[in-house]
Image (cartoon, rainbow, N blue to C red; front, side, top):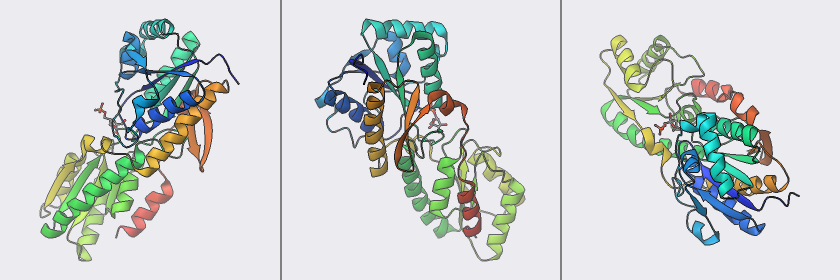
Length: 327
Ligand code: F6P
């Protein structure tokens, strides 16, 4: 057990994700449980560089387990990518007497964390916080379950209009570089096709699918398009399809940041709570530069470097299943 960890800083970094507050609450409460002072760093690395932080206690995290966003706010911080930015940040951590950090974020945040540790030696444990689910070292990331349920809810509603008007809806979901949200939500909403960066589905193939379905009597459909798909966003895909099938009545909906908001689901609250405790316990056990994740329902720790250098792909089996049953 590492008795030198007496003061831990916690921050949320990158895109906000539902469940980050539940993770923060778990970190704060487990610090209290283990007699460790907890400091909340506002606005991610941007706030760290400015020393924008304050003690965060037991009662400061009341009634946040159900709240979306992050009460300590987040940022994407360009200056922290440079050694000067990190030195400036570390000077603030020293001023505050911080012994270790818990960072709730995604790949970019962990790459920065790794550098901060290498250059300045402060122990760091990460929690996977991103709706994209694109992190190695955890079956699910905090926010993914809520985001996919938000998509499902929206697509179910769009389907009402699609059916009522015999329309094809192209729905764009988040995932700049990854198709986890697209695949999971496409499968769960019975989309006729799912376009995602990790699987090649050309416009020609999509047109064949739509024609086949029209021939079998299907008059309305949902096509899910991940924002990072190689064919372009949903507007571009719809336009290309329309060139081949001008008779189709198409509509495009970009769900955008609605996917990042809202009250976290049970799965995200529980995941974030378990990982928040796991992070503090890891620091107490002398671990550093690891991310706490859950694989097969067990807490595991993966080196940060492995997390942000390993590319993860959505399940090929789920993609195959979606193709079989989307007829
Ligand atoms: O990383 C999460 C994410 O929501 C991506 O899916 C999306 O591409 C990106 O963030 C949007 O970022 P921003 O809110 O900075 O525009």
